Length: 332
Image (cartoon, rainbow, N blue to C red; front, side, top):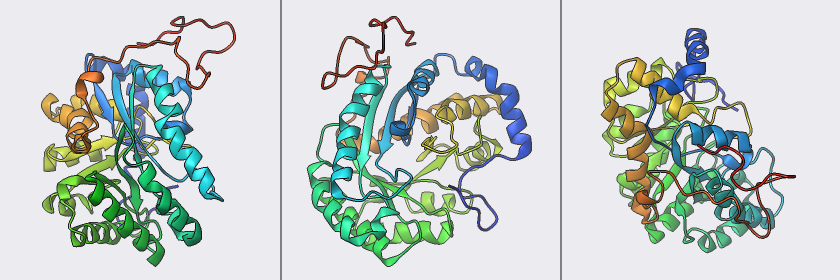
């Protein structure tokens, strides 16, 4: 999980005061975001429950992007990567649709498992089979973890893959020595001739945001793991830098995290006086603009909520259990 180094946390972890504010507002944050819609551009729903999907739908989350990532323990063979990638473009997309949420994904070899070079070589061979699939909106999440030579090698190879496919890149910046890793990630992307407008630099903080924006990249911020309502620091970022090329995500996964981080951050921004147009940009529109460059995002499919048909099945499987019948559980 997150490790701190330097003056700022790697992610936006809340102070005790901020967590108190979050606790007080947690019960009624929806009062501040009525009729708003949200897009979470980084969330790992494979690791989440149907309750989380239900909560996302009720909070106005219309679409999500699920980046391929490390599942908590090392995979032992390329077949496990195949099964995982297939689930992102298959079962998980179906599961999301059953709650009225449009599911996209990015496909890539994560930085941690890039250090198993024998396996990484095999994964690189299969990536072209997946990145052109319907609903794949980028190559990701890729980048650095321990900033090893192996991580750099496979980061470079995947940048070339993204460039060839004309897809956006979703870059994971390291938890340790974040500023150095972020600068290194951007420099390598530019070295490979990528348009910074096609690269989303994720997990930013106060030490990295200015350089990311100044160089023309997208700056994504992860409200994770303790900031239930977003926090004052994210509000201050938007106050200082505006809303252009900035987006908020939850990166909710198998650890302590909050899938509702995006709508809760929007609520806190409203409370703190951020203009609604700016809130919409950082919690909805900017993510669309960045990843729509893939040619895979059609807003009309989800902006008013997807039609739900719980009588549908995926490979003979359904989200319903026992005596449940289609549409007898509340979805929005």
